[in-house]
Length: 121
Ligand SMILES: Cc1cc2nc3c(=O)[nH]c(=O)nc-3n(C[C@H](O)[C@H](O)[C@H](O)COP(=O)(O)OP(=O)(O)OC[C@H]3O[C@@H](n4cnc5c(N)ncnc54)[C@H](O)[C@@H]3O)c2cc1C
Image: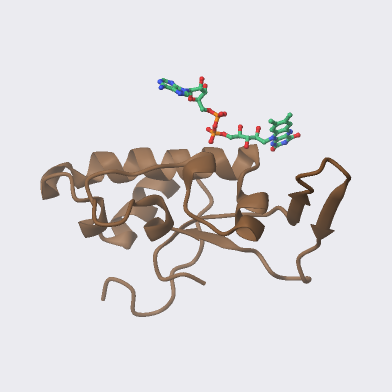
């Protein structure tokens, strides 16, 4: 669990072979529900920008799972909420308390990961 998790992913690792010769699929272990961290959505050295969907920073295996539409939409919703909440902080999306972000997302009907104990304390 990432301390800055903004949403769940749910899809297995699903690597389409570059030569077009099939797919390498690895199913998640029972009970494993990956999450997407905010910091994967913020470009290096620029806390005033945020990305979502396929642009989220990840290695090939993680990207093969989080690229699907449901997770792309969840990261997009989180990115929009972070951008709105960062207004009071001069646009620095990394300064938004995770609890505030989760509250806004839940109020809008999103299902969010449970934050680890101690985050934002
Ligand atoms: C053939 C195929 C089948 C798929 N099947 C499935 C499936 O069954 N289920 C599933 O969940 N996922 C599927 N996916 C994956 C999923 O659809 C994509 O990964 C997901 O839609 C990516 O969302 P995104 O918002 O990151 O990007 P996109 O959906 O690509 O959105 C990016 C948008 O930005 C616009 N844009 C680009 N450049 C500019 C610019 N300079 N200015 C303004 N706008 C711009 C584009 O026109 C586009 O509308 C499939 C993908 C493909 C290609």
